[in-house]
Image (cartoon, rainbow, N blue to C red; front, side, top):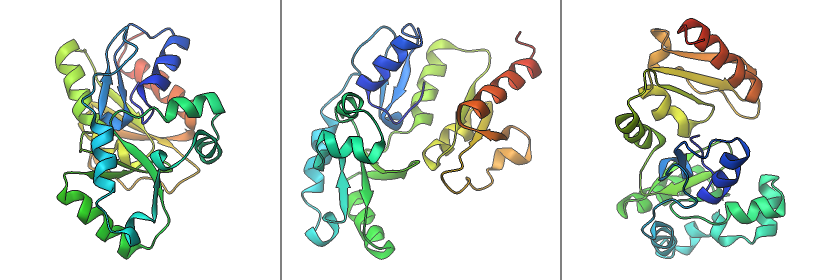
Length: 218
């Protein structure tokens, strides 16, 4: 699994799917959850991110409301998660998702200041997520180097999946009716990246079944 979710969230999902022996990419590539582990290795990146946010001018900082500015009830409300699930989402180790309420000009200035501190921002399905630049593609490369798989496949539906889709042997853009579609990626011209017509899990499932058949992996 490669997700924007935290390690505690992925631990629960991985256990429910009986995938505990597999590594997982967490917080948009900012960390990796090792097989059979219940915690991703960390070096207090989240505290460092929050400290940098205190250096942003108030007129800009007030337009960004991150998970660290919210209580569990508010996180549950904006994500649609249960209170227990929202509590897991609040246990950040590497990155800070949040909502931007200001204008585009102020956002550009906000991002420029963050960049001077080594912080990058990625747009996901709903949130603007801040981190120190690691991506899902970076972590995927590490996992590929360690496990040497026969094929590599990446599936995603948001801008924070683009790097991962571009570097995988096979990429699949899963339809997401809740946001504008991703722009055409270079790999689509060569047929290395495809798009699903079905959305969400149904699109993911059909894409994988079709790919398994095409690669003759039955």
